[in-house]
Structure formats: C-alpha cells, structure tokens
Amino acid sequence: MAVDSGEPKFSLRLLVDEEKNKVVLAEAGKDFVYVLFSFMALPMGTIVRLLQKHQKPQRVVVGSFNNLYQSVLEMGIDNFQHEACKQSLLYPRPLRDECLKLNVHDTEVTGYFMCRESVNRDYCRRYYSILNILRCSCGQLMDKEIQLPEEDDLDDLDDSYDLGEIDVLDGVSVSNQSSFFITDDLKVVSGSVVLMLKDLKGLGYTGFDVLDEILLDVGPMEVLTLLECLFSSDAPLTDTFLRKQSSQCITRVHDVLAPGRQENADATETDQVVTLDVLFRKKDKKILYVECGEDFIDLLLTFLVVPLESVWEISGSNLILGCIGNLYKSFKGLRLNEGPNASVSKCVPSWYYSHQAQLLGLSIQQPPVIYCNVCEFQLMNSYIAGLDPSHYIRVAFFDPRYDGRAPSVPGRGFLKRGSRFTVTDDLTISPMNSSSAICLIKQLEMDLDEIDDHVISISKAEAISTLRASLMTSAALTTGLGSLLAAKSKGEN
Image 1: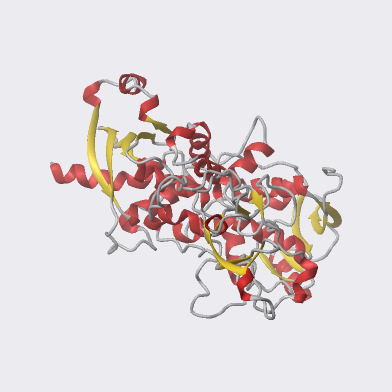
Image 2: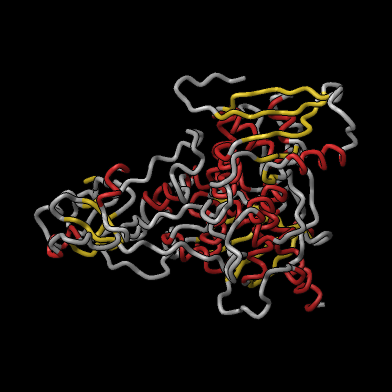
C-alpha cells in the first residue's frame, strides 16, 4: 500500500476469494464512488498524461492517444495561435477542479484573471481569463487574480449566486446513499444485503468459508493504478489491490465500425467537410500518412480535450475496452435525471474548445455569465441583492486564441492559419515546415509503385469513426477512414 503523507484516504472493504486471489466484491462509501465516477469527467489528454507519469518506463498505451498527446508536446509554439493554445491542449481543464477529490492530477486549480490595469482602465476590466499568460489589448499581462468568495461566505450571498461551474456528478444518486457494492469489473450498485446475496450466489458462492474480508485505505497512487486498470484490465479491483499492477497493456486490435455503419453518426450532416491528401499502400489500403491543413489537426487535437464519458458516448455502445463500459453504464444508471435530456452527457468540453468540437457534434459547456464587483474584484453571475449595481460590470471571457492585437475571429482554431501537416496512421503529427518530403518517402522503405494517393473529404461520420478508432487501435486512420478510401478506389475502377 502506497503511503502519501498529507493526502486524504478513503476506506474500501474488499471481499476476497483467497484461493483464487481475486476480489469478489467491494463495499465503499459515496466518496470512493465519486472518485470512480469522476474518471468519466477526465479529458483524454489528462488521462494520457497521468498514466505516462504513473507508469515509467512501462506505460499503458491508450490506442493512438499517446502519440497524439506527444505530438502536441513536441510541436513548436510558433505553430499555435498563442502559447496558451498549446497549454490548454496539454493541460485541459476538468469540469471541476475537485472532481477526483484526491490530488492525482497535475492540472492547476482554475483561477480567474484580469488585466493588471483593470483598476485604472474601464476597457481592461471587461475581460477575464482562466490563464495568466495572456495579454490584454493594452499589452499588459492578464495576471491579476480575482479572488472568489470563500465557501463559508456563500450563505451571505443571494440564492442566485453561482460561478457557472458544472458538477459532473449532479443527478447521480449518491448523496443519500451510505454504501455501494462494486464488482471486480466495476459495476456499481446501491448497497443492499439482498443484492449482495444475489451477486454471491450468482458467482457460485454458498458461504464465506473461502472468502476473506480486507479493509484498505485508498490514496492517490491506488487511484492512479485503478485508472490505468480501467483501460487495460478485466478485473481492475483485483489488479489494483491484490496484484498492484495492470494485468496487461492495451495492445488488442478491435473491430471498429466503419463510418457507414457508425451507430450514432448522422449520415445527413454534410455541412462541414475537411479535405485530406491520403498516401496509402495499394495492396491492403493501409494509410501511410495524410497531408492536411490545420482544420484536420484542430479536429484531432479536440480528441485530447473531450472527457472520457463523451468519447465513450459518441463512439457507440459496443466497444470492449477494459471495464469502461461497466463504469459508464453504472454512472448513467445511477443518475436521478429521468427527463428528456437524461441521455445527454454532462461531461463536455469547455466553451473555448467550441470550434474544434463542431465536426464531432459534441455538446459544449456554455461560458458563464459573469459580473465583476469592481471594488472587491470578485466574480459572480448575478448582482447581489442590496448592493449598488454601479459596482458591477459584465465581464466577457478572453479567448486564448485571441492575441490582443487583432479582433477575435469566431471559429478560429488553435493552430495558425495556412499551416500544413502530415499525420501518420498512429496519429503522430508533424508540421511540414519541420520535415522533408524526400525523407518522408524514404522512411517508408517501399517501392514507389506500391504507393498510391487519393484526395478524400470527411464529415461527421468519419470524424466520429476516427475518434473511436483512436481509442481502440494504433492504426487510427486506416481503421477510421479506410472504408472511405476503399469506396473511392472502387469508384475509380
């Protein structure tokens, strides 16, 4: 058991089959269940970064996401609209800073910043940022932190006070439950003696003669191992608490639906199209790499900021990858909201990723309506009753794609316009200004008559298929776009 001084711990009671060295069932309180469900709110880029830091030198590889994240890490700042654009992709903000209730992620706590001249200039106090490296149009850094009210002060505020935060666990019926049962493959149900007996009988146990009870304290290291096992193991609790490691790396090749068969892709949506030059091997239509503009790269980079729940939800219901499906179904099943929007994921990207998310058809978290108390530099989403309205001004969000020297352009991506890139089958991205076309061809080590090229156009169906493939395999482009390439080749014969 890892010891983390000063870190909170959660109690977990395990029922273990001693002969098989296997967790049969776990009983936990609502705090630990919150930890499990919070995995669904983590952006994919955060998951990759956490797993890379947790397992060195051996690491769990999540499809093509590791290569995608590494590409952003190695890409020069001059390829982005602003340094903040790169940082917001490498460190995508979780929907709630406290969503894991344990200090297992290295993303800084969300702060709110304004221009340091906001006290003196009216214009400078009309924008706020969640990053302290942006510059106001006046040229000054927006690094003046705006203090939020302390939690104890909230009772003194009007009932309409709200900072616009979204609790990803709102609507999950855990607040009134004292205990839950968790199976080894991460199915979570409300605690009940009847259910426990039913599960034990279903597993073939007639008594407790081969079962042992173990009480554990769970800290950050165990949580990270559990996150790793969520992707790579069929028995996460056993691998985390008894074997202390993931049982396998993610190397399996899965059947990924072709775009035409994608369950939740709308075939009628053709408004937005991205064009790619594809270089592929003739004999098996394996994509070697694509040459593209910044619009396709913006789409791929979006994959890093999409929370796991949204990735799983838009990718379809028949994936088999670790125990994510079981946790997802438990998360959805315990939600209280039974209204018409109950199936809509609350784990969505923040509003400043809106452009990149369009082709995926994702719901986007809307920016909060924020006012600033100029006298005390506090942010809130409404006037507080009884105070002078003249003390408040409407504060707009300062888009990280806006450099302060030119007007903000709606729909502008994170990369500089007019750029060209190459992307390999496993989603390794390289700016063309940093690579040689001759070297690219030579690295293929193939005769030229074995290679062919096509121009293809992708829309929402192919975008979703590529996202799905990125989660499951290292051949993301071939798997996600291969049927489109095959159809084009057939049409030319």
